[in-house]
Image 1 (tube, rainbow, N blue to C red):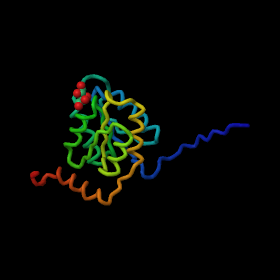
Image 2 (cartoon, rainbow, N blue to C red):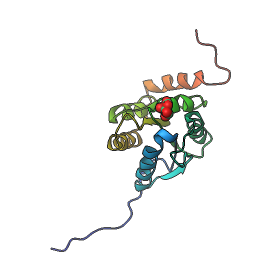
Image 3 (spheres, rainbow, N blue to C red):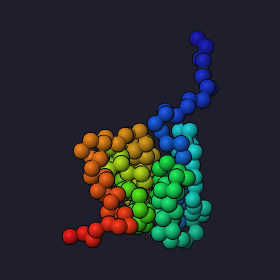
Image 4 (cartoon, rainbow, N blue to C red):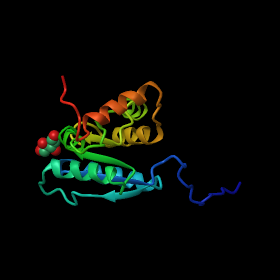
Amino acid sequence: MAVVTDTTPVPPPADLPGIVAVGSDHAGFALKQELAAHLRARGIEVLDLGAHSADRVDYPDFGAAVGRAVVDGRADLGVAVCGSGLGICMAANKVPGVRAATVHDVTSARLTRQHNDANVICLGERLIGVEVAKDALDAWLDASFEGGRHADRVAKLDALGAPDAEPAR
Ligand code: RB5
């Protein structure tokens, strides 16, 4: 029997982001490249903010770059990678309007979209494998913010980063 291969490109689902910003330091460079390729394979445009090699750089520069791209609308979502996924996430979260979360697996990735409406996820190349990272990225992309009781909490999160925010008590 003849095998028919359908080569028609499959458009991404309507609720997938059009553009995802990616960034990393040197310690996250290889995983960032893998995740960028994975995004492109899913039909998502990638805004690659560097690093563009494994030469030593500083993660705050790249976490901030990813966060700014999301907040100013050049990208719909962001992915940031460093060695641990921690420092670059701290940097991204310094940008008002960013809700960045370090994820280690499918479950943390899914939950941070459903409950926290995370607009940036951060991963640690030295801590998780490539396949787990890709699965986590997919879980985050394919999940949706649940709203409801989570909406007020996310609004409170965003208010903490607003320029006129009350000092915490
Ligand atoms: C770089 O050595 C490493 O400190 C950085 O990639 C990251 O893990 C920091 O949080």
